[in-house]
Image (tube, rainbow, N blue to C red; front, side, top):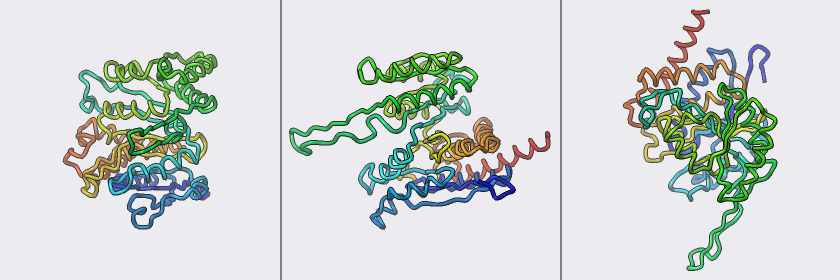
Length: 365
């Protein structure tokens, strides 16, 4: 979209619960600065879906709003979850409804070490932890097939079914190969548990078949328990990982801790060339909500992923570089709520660094 003189994008924003509105506010502050520095415009369309909204109105996100989302360029989500509401109710009505309703079949999670001292592992260098996890995002145990029979009785039985389709697996695997072929190492690892969960053999067979079309990409396959071990013992062995919905959810939280904490990590829920959603992967942290101490780095990194997705690569690189510069210089000493800096102060630092970096680049040109 364009106003005739510069690109313009419509961004839907769901601030959500807990610390969500606080970190989203800082992300939007960075976005406003990027718009000015890199000559594009954004129209922000805010949506109220949250636990507070549900408690006030009884309304969850209606399915009809998905049609409105399709007219946007991207969605930006803060966090969801509140102990006053049934666990998962609001999250399912928003996150799962968007993922399934918009068919956002890729969950893209970079795992990047910005500064060595942030990693809890000894001897891990920045270059040792630089991977991307491609998590299938619309199938597996998350589709909700199953239920509970005779709940609350001695005979209570709970059933959850894992669903994998050839179409769902193949499009995820192909996306991963396309990404791997564009990275310097050109290596792709499949993570599954097909030895014990035999239906996951569909992943092994599909992976092997698609690999024949990508001779430039080296491959291997690792069971999920071994993958978790290698992420701690030898993270440098991984470049791009492709895996199931459930295993990807678990492994990327481990990856977030390795890169410095949940406050550092960002993700994209993507359907290529269609409206997609970007979010930090931390929770709503109701225990610190409203205290202005939550790290907004994950939300700002998610904003950078959004910019990359809509085509503003230069602005995205500027935001990523600003985050890295602040962490390596220790002007932002950490990625949690105990840094001594407020949420607003960290956002302001990113804005100033972004402005400074753009000015330096302009001078050098």
